[in-house]
Length: 232
Length: 268
Image: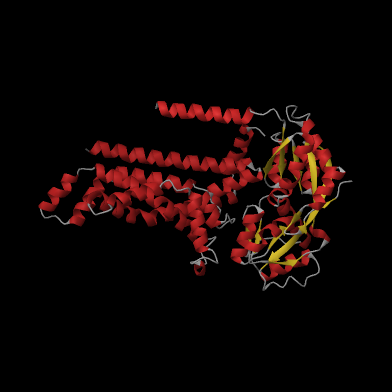
């Protein structure tokens, strides 16, 4: 079958609101959005502490976090699988092959990315503002909030980068989710499965949904950024 | 920058020389995971390569994908176990010279306590009915593989739709499916080869076997050279001949996994 024919079939699947296809899309979004929203605030706090405080061993923490960004998602999947397995230490939770397990895995994947990128963004902001404000007697939490607000665009970019990573990852979702139809089958595991089956049209259709998502996110980012520049 | 360019250049030289270093002819075989992961091919291929001088590259995928690769001319021959799909494959002119090669069988495995009481059933259709009626967890391959097609055939016999609450379609290979069944303490249908290879790692037991319906025949089919003149039809033919001749058939019968014969040679 030609690539063109496959693409046409894929478009047809999308437009005809193929139920199975959209169910998969829904799983992808609910899992990845839950993961990122659960992890975003802890990441900001951690990044802030790393950027604005000094403590012994800070460089070691930073190196570890930067290294963790490069961990293959299947390795995280494997570790989580062993923890959650019936014979594993967390087996009693009965979480394996549920959306919760996928969310957990994706949180682990995006946490180091978020912290590392947000740390970079906060570090680049002007730290004299913090020092001045503190000398003037403004509470630290307020200053922190202001600083985070001022760096919102790079922080948003970091969040989008992390989201792109988890919404496209296949290794961990496959291992701890199990690709169960209607429950834990998301876009990447479905693409892996469809191409494994030789059903390329479904795979291409899902790939297009992912691409559209990436495009929408980038449009969104550049539009808010545009407004940001206009205001100054 | 220079270093990167050099590395890329070096890598491409390495990969180029790796792909073109030898003059031995390669045969590309698409086959089911059951023949590959059981170790059968690792047992047969060195003998064949010694006898013929050909080198066989194995691509292990489900039957669905294997046939698809044959249809696309990505491989030279296929070795699969889904009689209906294979018949279509040959009828449509994608494949030629289908030959019966060997068979093994499927078994139904599940948790030792056997909540759905399938052990005492008379036929595999009855087994499936009890599982559905009890609403037990049943993990289905759901991947268009030969095993999945077999399973769907049995559901069709029961006149039931496999859409009860415990039915889990996972779209994965036999090994991962068995692991999931063990983790969820559910039932599944597996080929005996993968079962023997995995049984030590699983908390499952064979609960039902021996029904004629669970018979699992393998065929070897050449990809039609009229559709794809560039494929290695000659080599594929030599391999297919070797498999169905006494030596290949004898080796198939001799292959053992955990001390048990796995495949019964059945070439005519």
